[in-house]
Image (tube, rainbow, N blue to C red):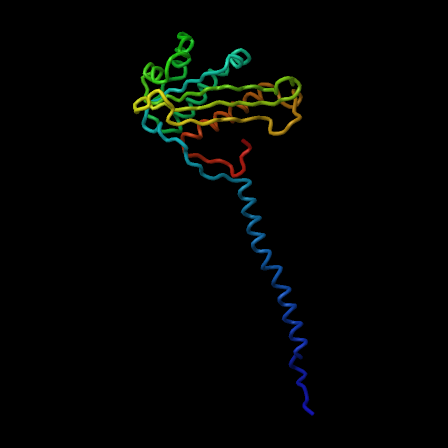
Length: 227
């Protein structure tokens, strides 16, 4: 009869040891992708990434920003055209590498003193201001409440922005255009006890100016933007 070496594990015991080792390793291996994915997701939630411009034709060119607003907006918020004209122009002159700009006060003064400017063609306006690019903002919505609901905030700003290249073959047509729409608050149910009207308008303006001007220069945006 052959004697079994007590120091060598039997085939059954060896199999149990292999299975136990595999069981110990497998969860750790599966957890690595999950851990890395979780870290990447956490990084994205608190970080930004680079977004290229959609139109870079303001670079080394002179430009003017002109804002046209619906009559209802002019009536309910008479200051909005001036504020947006100023904010958009100031952002673009510091970020879009343009060669020159018509000051907002000059544009607004021209609109005030020439009420028939709305009947002029785009190339006529560009020629009047002496610029190579005209950034035209057609503001068709700027409100703080949903229609018929004066008790809760429902801010919305929306416009079409277009660019005219006065020195190009299509001087009276947009060579680039985009719809812009932002809102605030991000959730329903907020009223005057939560925010003032001035706060709602200020956030709308910032979001609107961000979204509009970001079209013209490379910039950083959150991975998960609120607007």
